Image (spheres, rainbow, N blue to C red):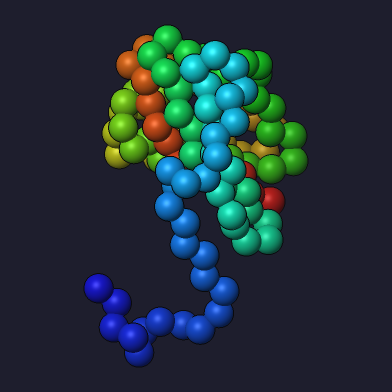
Length: 111
């Protein structure tokens, strides 16, 4: 717990992730766009078992990072399980998929 004297005044957002509507991008691929601050786009993705991102995800001018909360996500030939942090810089691309199903919290950011 943070003591009140250690809380810095300013903008703070808090949201129950399950209350944010999910958008189905493809069969078994759902994304929830979370409220955020300038310069960062925050989201949660859920991939059902056997689901794959609908197309190559290209990051021309921005980076992306995510944290695997549960399940496993596959990037190329690498499997990332719970507790794994994965980051991509600008000028990268990937197409995540999952055999087990996965939930990940992530963000896109301007560099």
